[in-house]
Length: 306
Image 1 (spheres, rainbow, N blue to C red):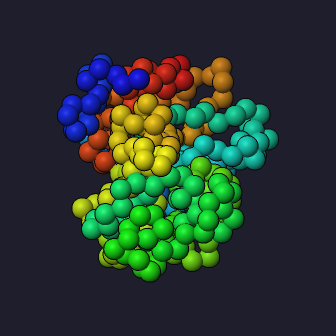
Image 2 (cartoon, rainbow, N blue to C red):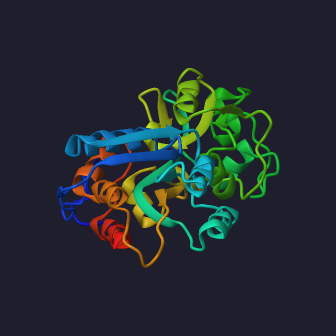
Image 3 (cartoon, rainbow, N blue to C red):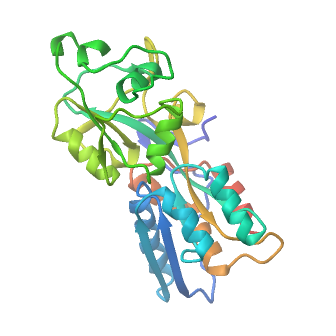
């Protein structure tokens, strides 16, 4: 359920129960982050906020896709592995084979994986089988193939072909969408694969008949997120519907770290995570267009640092 004060009218605010970050002494050194493109802006903003508190910290961020995070953690080229999907079992197995324990998963934000259309597109909503029928060649959810806009209720756009935008296979957003929207089916060959989330949104904003998917934090004035759900009962991609479970493509954004159970947590990494989960860090989440963690969830994540 919604934490009190998390929503105020239409404006998202951080949970008032979240405490401000408290600085500690002796924090310096280098942090490397390799992973999600979806989290790229957030990681950059968090790094800037953290460096403002700790000037002797240097943070390098690379965001080419969630699939790049597990190898970086395994090889030790990064301490932080941001991902927009959970690690696959084979990724966890590869990590555990090297280290003898599993990577630690930290939830850092809530995201509505949005289906975006051009800002002037009047479509009222879509069912998940319709989304599958638009993007998938295998249609695991049982719908008829959809290629034209009148098939989703836009009679004024009869005969107008949909123009599909998506991500490449290194992307966690691609993987999450494939699993949850396509029922692990295959994408159509006509999906224009983009190297980053911002490119997806830019493409749709310049294409009246465009449709694609991306994290809600990449929304611009040129696009709108389509309400999703069941026929006649669609839910907006907002925090309330993500927390209630009504929005069908809500997800946590994650950072994975390498921590051996029973040993002291790396101090620099732990403080960065504490900053992210604090009021300061979650205000950054709101600033970047994603949804903040309720205080109870943030507390569960910082408890992992002990």
